[in-house]
Amino acid sequence: MKEEEAKRIKNLRERRDWRGRRAGRALCPNLIRALPGILLAVLLAGCGQPAGSPAATAPAAPVVSVAEVVVKEVTQWDEFTGHIEAVDTVEIRPRVAGYIERLGFKEGKEVKKGEVLFVIDQRSFKAELLLAEADLARAHARSQLARAQMARARKLVEKRVIAADQFDERLAADAGASADIRAAEAAALIAGLNLEYTEVRSPIDGRAGGALVRPGNLVSGGEMIPEATLLTTVVSLDPVYVYFECDEPTYLRYGAMARQGQRQSSREVENPVFVGLADEQGFPHEGRMDFVDNRLDPATGTIRARAVLDNHSDPRGGRPFTPGLFARIKLLGSGTFSAVLVDDKAILTDQDRKYVFVLGAGNTAERRDVRLGRIIDGLRVVTEGLVAGDRIIVHGVQKVFSPGMPVTPRTIGMGDPPPPPAPASDGGEPAAPAEEPNA
Image 1 (spheres, helix red, strand yellow):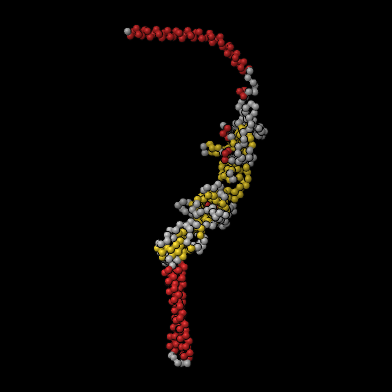
Image 2 (cartoon, rainbow, N blue to C red):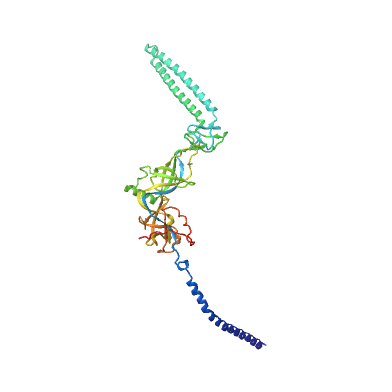
């Protein structure tokens, strides 16, 4: 049975191979007969192609925007981060002890110097003042009596009616009465001050914080009590300080420029600063340097500096700065120097190197490696690689695949947005204005 099955499969394979060879023999004469017609059709199609069609020409050079580098005198500014602080911050504590009777201010509102913030129960202090005034009156009465007795004793001793020691007693009594007056006056003054201290007043103009003690609570106070109760705080509003930390390399650079006469030290002159808050664009607020610390912090490698800003109230009563706000600071970082400036959009990266495409001879893109500096007035400073008169590709650099590639330039100003696309020509391609090739 197995031999019959194998023979049957072999016959089927032979029959299939024979049919394939037969079909091939039939196809070859037909293909040979049709080949001249196919070649003729291809030749006729090639002869009918227009000479100026897109298929017969090379691809058009891509349209790019080029701008001449900007060369001008600039000043470098360094940027730091810091925070706003009040010039004066006062902790309001009572100078006498007692119970808080009432509040004299609205929490969080601006207060004036001398405005009453808290009132302590005054009844006991008024009584002490009355008692001191009564003692003062008695001292005056005793003094008058002593003075009269001394006057009589002076006349009697001159007539030798009384002994000299009795006159001396009258004289001492008069002097003691005068001293009692001064002591009573001092006691009355202290009692008056204590009564005055029951009205806790703001020592500065500023903004009050929240009341930390409410009416009805007992507070401790007094100049000799170290833990007098904290009632609230008041911070001054105008002007304000902005503190920031300057790193060691920048500090050394400032010192070198000061010694060379390129930039004056902020310790000697009030160098200008510009400040911006977290929700602001740029640095709209102008101030001046006020202080540079006398040492660097070895733990952080920075030195503390401070500027002063005006914080005037607007017509609606608002102020731009509040103590504690985050601030961005721009500080004068150099003298005036000539710089080459380009748009950041023109700068490309090749691993660790930066480069631009310069419009070269024959409107070709030439690669030029550059070294970059800071951004000034929205443009990037190029310290090496470009010179005045160079024209670089700003918009359309993604269309340049390799150095030497031809391009169709369209001139714009440095920093300008890309120009609108040119209207399409009759052939459906954008008509780009041609420029003269660079010499």
